[in-house]
Amino acid sequence: MARKGKISRKTKETSISVDLNIDGKGKYKIDTGIGFLNHMLEQLSKHSSIDMDIKAKGDTHIDLHHTTEDTGIAIGEALKKSI
Image (cartoon, rainbow, N blue to C red):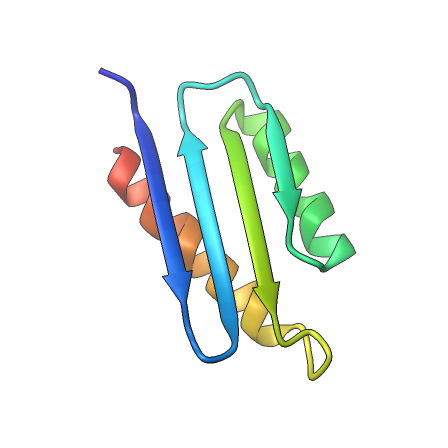
């Protein structure tokens, strides 16, 4: 049985989709609009061997908080589904 999780999360501030395969090879396609967050999630994917496809759009013109927070929530929900 494949251990995968897919989540879409939409709030007033963000729109996020996360697709994970925890039995992957560490392949990733990540676009959050936040360079440092992209980098950290890429490293998580690579070193954990979890395949990640993450797309996030948020109100980064105001601050990075909502996009970062909601991306983390969506990843957690996708991980929970995959287990």
